[in-house]
Every structure is written in C-alpha cells, then in structure tokens.
Length: 273
Ligand code: NAD
Image (cartoon, rainbow, N blue to C red):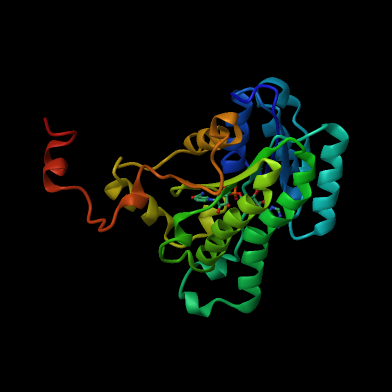
C-alpha cells in the first residue's frame, strides 16, 4: 500500500507514542519513514524504536525538532531534503498543554498556557506543512491527530479542546491551500489511549472506563488501530480524501446520550439472537 513512499513522522516520545504506532503501520505497508522527537531527552529512545521498524525503516533517521523553534523546523526540512529527493507523507502527532491547565475550570486558563497550547498543538501543523510542502512537488498527504474534545466538551480537556478545535479548522484551511498542489490534509481522532501526553489529562482512567461502557463497540481502541487509519490516509487509496476528520474511537463519538449498556446486555452478554 505504501511501497516506495517516504514519510516523515513527527512526535515520537516513547513506545506508547501514537507517532510510533503510525510509523510502524506505515513501515509495515512498505513505506520508508524518518522520525522526529522533541529534544535530546527522547532521542536515544526514538533511535532504539526506529531500529525495530521493518524494511528500510529499520535505519530510520531520527531528527530533533522542537516545533516552537522556527530554526528547528528549517533544519529538519534541510536534513530531509539532503537525504530524500521528495517526501510523500507527513504525520503530525504533537500536542502539549501545561498539566496545570488540564484539570479544574476552563475559565481559569492562563494567557501563557493558552498561547503555549495553541502554538505547539495547532500552529506547529501550519508551520511544518508550509516547510514540507515544497518537498512534495507531485503531491502528498499530511495527517494530524486530533480529538473529540475539540468538538464536544470533555471535562478537564479544557484548553486542549480549544487547541484541537483550532487544529481541525487549520486542517480544512490547509486542505484548501494545498489542494491545488495535490497535497491532501486530513485528521484522525483517536479515542483515549494511555500515552505520556494522556497521563497529563485529569481523570483519564475514568475516560477509558466510560468509553468501554458506552461506546457502540464497548471497548477502547488501541494505538495500532490509529496507525492503520493514518497509513490509509497516507496512501493513494485515500487519494480523493482531503479536509476530512476520521474518528477511530470504537464509535464513541456517535453517541448522544451515553447512559451505558442496556440491562439485558449486562445480564446476558453478547448480541441478542
Ligand atoms: P505522546 O506524549 O507520546 O506524544 C506527544 C508528542 O508531542 C511527544 O513526542 C512530545 O515530545 C511532543 N511534543 C510536545 N511538545 C513539543 C514541542 N514543543 N516540539 C516538538 N514536539 C513536542 O502522546 P500521544 O498520545 O501519542 O500524542 C500524540 C497526538 O495524539 C497528540 O496530538 C495528541 O493530542 C493526540 N491524541 C492522543 C490521544 C490519546 O488518548 N493518547 C487521543 C486523541 C488524540
């Protein structure tokens, strides 16, 4: 599905990172990937993870890129340009808000906390897409990871919800900007999955329990399920899709009133015959 394609995957912190699941899913479909991590703290771990990838990706380069630094984005682009003649897809799997902002009342969000969350979690997509687009002369695919908290209220998600709403909107504007160049821009919205970032969200375990109880599939999703959808969007199979938001959440987002399993399911289990 991705044989012969080259992709840059941003945001590997550790083995639980959705970025790594996306890199692995793409590499398993034949893509050659390059990874980024935020800083030195994550670099050796990202290199060790890269070595576990299949095919040409086993020697995947790992670049440091702090997306708040324009010079890091410029040097990342130069490093890629000197190594590859083109980039076919870009996966943006980066977000941050100060954990203090991810509990308590949204109205208490600080001005610096708001700016930081929006800068790292939304503006970075715009900056990176702009930098990488020239490396996609015959078109390409940009995929970012968003979350339902940008569309609905998720308690404690607070300023990250606002950042995700902005990210979703940026996806649509980028899709319009880059569409004439054959570059598609889409987002994947996973349900809650235990990762380093997720550990900063207040009551995260309660969210996992709730999704398991009330989602149509009565379970949470796994990182590889997210990676597979990202690989699809990166591939030519999704060549007619841009500006889209795809939920990978066991159906949770279709629920209106989420009151839990019907009584007969609790007692009998399984599907009624
Ligand atoms: P993660 O902590 O593994 O990944 C987040 C990454 O963002 C890390 O690699 C971190 O180093 C990076 N980052 C933060 N600030 C940065 C900066 N200034 N410059 C460069 N990189 C920076 O957690 P994750 O859950 O894999 O998160 C990846 C994406 O998935 C995020 O956009 C997150 O919002 C999204 N997402 C996660 C979940 C979930 O439940 N885990 C659900 C929906 C969406």
